[in-house]
Image (cartoon, rainbow, N blue to C red):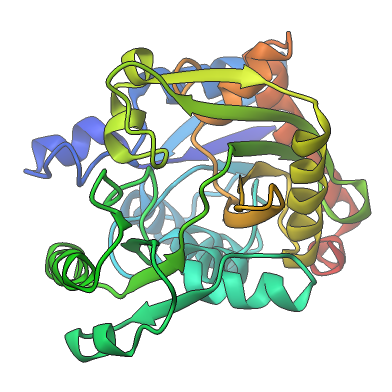
Length: 333
């Protein structure tokens, strides 16, 4: 059995001149090696493919695989996470995680909010700022929270993201529009506890595998799980696996969102409590970070007493099950 791995290697992008923040979402050699080791078994050939351009060249040369473990983020456009899945669909090659339609939707946080609301999942009220003229049309009460509409790893989220005045709203939105060249999502600020919920599987078989509470400590930004908090997580963040009533309510909301969107195989849903203690969907991560040491899903999994290799094999096993059921399994999930 030939198993390919598609990924964007951080070191490759740094060598090409990307900044540390621009390359923050990409994976380290440790992650790729960890996935390869977890999937290794007698009778399996593990093939490191690389990014979407590497995949194009290999497909054009006639290469194929029985399954691809895809964690490629892509680097251009709002459909960047959909590029590898779309190519693999076109060649009829099965792969882990969700398809191009879901990846395109969920990278756009405002569109995702609109869709999950149709499934009865509560979100914060929100507006989308596409251009400077939209800032004066934001008619939500303060405090607000602003972030780029389509970035991961909390890029663009800082202690300035919590906004208490019209002047700050204008300054932050203008800065984000210029820096990230994409719309800004402005939401009602959620002041309560923050959770990330780990999920495995698809459709009715999907299940929440743990609720991780994320809390700032020391020099950490208390307003949110900011970019700086994620980059310096050892000094700024405390992670705790929780199962109290609020955590279980968050898990139920996350699972409802996961199933409503039709996410596949594994990932995370981020949830925060509002001023009344009720859970609100923040965003879904259908292509979760899998760094064995520092990514949220492996941290959650480890705190639950499980081995990293078991997590990778669970995701892979879900994709294999879908492949055996045929493509209808993807559509039905």
